Length: 466
Image 1 (tube, helix red, strand yellow):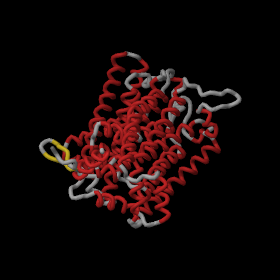
Image 2 (image 1 turned 60 degrees about the vertical axis):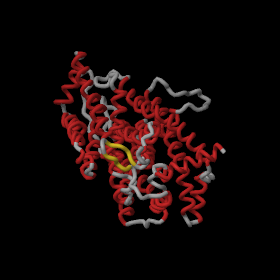
Image 3 (image 1 turned 90 degrees about the vertical axis):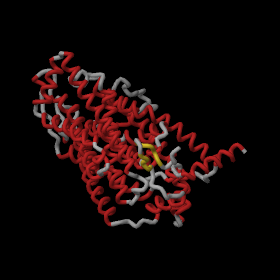
Image 4 (image 1 turned 120 degrees about the vertical axis):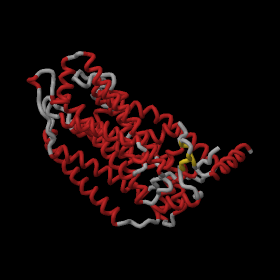
């Protein structure tokens, strides 16, 4: 039987964490990143750039609230533009964190333990970015609370036949469960940070958040039970949330939208772009914070293989969509296919096919999966390709309606770009701050991969039986 720190891959053993670590060294190395590592000029510069981008975003949002959605490029018939494109894109990115944390936990995949913490944080920040866009798109964002059922004298209730309301409930549920799941997983690590720090203020903060954790067998038993239950709740949400988002399009009669392939197609695309973002974050994090012994080449390669597999599912969705379009013989669907290939947005369609289908085939080669720079560039390529896919689905379908008299072009304005790029700054700033105040790698879960963890588990079990 292999040691807990190793996993069989073919005839070789690939380490989940590098050997030589103990409980003490894992705690000390990860906690020191937050507690003892000095604030570097690179970190300050990166946060400053993200903060400046965020100011651009705030200016664009304030101007949007003052003038209305007319400052965007939306028109008739393209009533949806960057707002919905970016909403779907950010929700997709938020899927990988829950997949890594919940589904791989239930499947007992130990390689998740090094990357689940910052992937969960990525989920929360991506959901926060996604949740802004439907509010901005309302036209009267100060009335967004109307989307929730609340006691009121006018007996006003949300229209539950509207996909916008479905999105509100799906995304808010997903965000709530993800937040609770992330916090519960942090509790043992917060207690470790409490015990490691000598700063009285930090000790009070970490101690309060640790909720009285004392590392007892009873605490571990309740923690593992709660963590497993939350993983069971979060798992169906991975499939349901983006399925509900796909219904925004699938229930419409617009050519290119009214298809049953959208739910699985959207879920696969979400995991595809989500794992691309995980690699975009994991590769620089392990390098700059010197934790390559925890986030090993095995984690990078496994994420690349998941990205390759989901990329082929996305390719299958493209093929099925084209086949159903040809086999159905609907003239409007046929025109949509022609418009994507030869219309004014044809460059976007060919670019998404190249970025999503052609470039990721490099991942079939092991040398490519082990080349972190190349893998980083491929992940960025996938993120751009998946954004273009959402753009083609939303804008190209809407810009050519059933009648030529309703044809129109959508051109994003500077405010469209400012809000989109601003959310990138918001997301990046949140990640910079997260890396400074909380452990980016799970201390408690890494310890379970050590050989001595087996001995500890046996002793705890004997104590429980006694």
